[in-house]
Image (cartoon, rainbow, N blue to C red; front, side):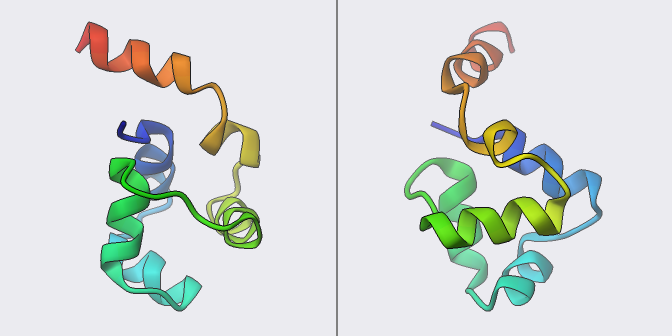
Length: 74
């Protein structure tokens, strides 16, 4: 399941997947996998990500049902 909140937060901050990956010292494909729901970050990486994107970690990774409803209305 896509993580639309993570995608939106990244875009709002003006980061490409590649720029965000460099900040976290990961590959672009890792960010893509997180955004597309193929994998999730380790806890420490999730906190770093939330800090970089200036979002609460709960806003990025919880409330999956809310994100699911986004796909059902689109």
